[in-house]
Length: 267
Ligand SMILES: [Zn+2]
Ligand SMILES: [Zn+2]
Ligand SMILES: [Zn+2]
Image (cartoon, rainbow, N blue to C red; front, top):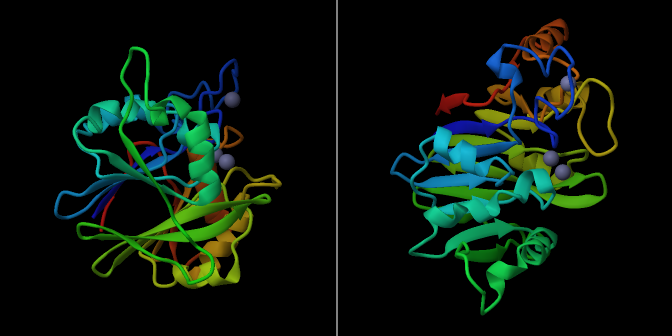
């Protein structure tokens, strides 16, 4: 599979509207971050996306996205959802499945209520097929999309239960966890033997609902993926400054770095 970072910024994106800080005005394109989203392309042509943030349309054009088999939502905050209407050109003929936990799907239906109404006056709407992923009781069920197997990873974003997603294709394993502040023990078990762990790491300073750099590094030390990539970054540090911060922590066992928009990794 190939993963491509469509966006790696926190909820404001970078540059932040009205901000003239050195990161927001940097000429290094790695400091220009759309809202966080990941594109996954399977070896036999499957295409799925994790989250549809406000820049989905621009991201899809930049990445030459011409088909989409499914959308996987982490949660319903605006920076992860509000580009959803722009999947219209990719869902003309068949309904597009959208997976999420119950709070996320309920919130998505409320936010985009016109999509699910029988009648609509004028204008088009995306054809969506919302699917609630159960993660309680009988255990966690995986979803198969062609050669890709996708498993929800329940985590907490402050007090909000949200989902990370584990994507597997054959032996290749990638986990995508953003907007995380706590990982239950049962979910840690899903994070073993990873090729790549993508982890939300907002900034150096602690935050009540997001991992800091140190908390993200701690998780990487704990689950030992072959590669760790930070996402959902804010404008406190430039790309280079995040690299230097990580280097100073002397994490010798893994390759860890901040992701950036457009970064593509083949597994
Ligand atoms: Zn977010
Ligand atoms: Zn700034
Ligand atoms: Zn959030």
